[in-house]
Image (cartoon, rainbow, N blue to C red):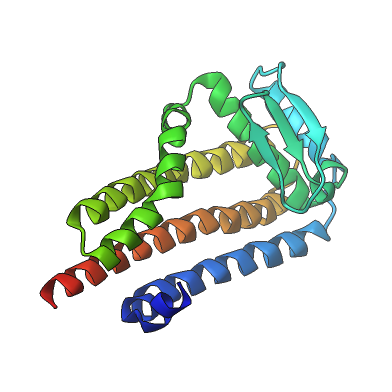
Length: 232
């Protein structure tokens, strides 16, 4: 594998720039979260209380809110109908924590209201996971064995994984939009604080955009590499 990556020009021309963009997106979300995690909200709601307030504002009462270890490990689990908030969010009263917690509550509201894209994502995730697990193996075998069949099957599976990432984008952006609207309507954050929360959520959303860019760059890289081998 190292040999393949070192001598593949498309790796350096296409994939590495996309990976650098993804790295910058991760650094940005970490820096933005750290900045606003040091600023407490005026009303003093914790992340857990903010998530509960957003749920109540939308008439959702059957979602549990739990503490989970880790940093930025916050998520909503639709299988158990639980919002899990990380160490730096659950008990914190910072602007960043309130924004992140409201975002996860936004996902719970999406499920409760039957939001179309999240239903689609839930339906295709098992297939996308299969594509993600086996596609690279088939693509690399197809490249080295000059097998159009193996390569084509790998590309199809990889494309399914990319579709999953693409469907995730509107889900994440919509959850952030719901969070900001809910925080404004419930007055959990003041207008100036809302701008900080929006920056945190926008930075987090860009990590999903960057991940999609990396996947598209990877797919283009393999297609060009295979076409080059065919010409040779």
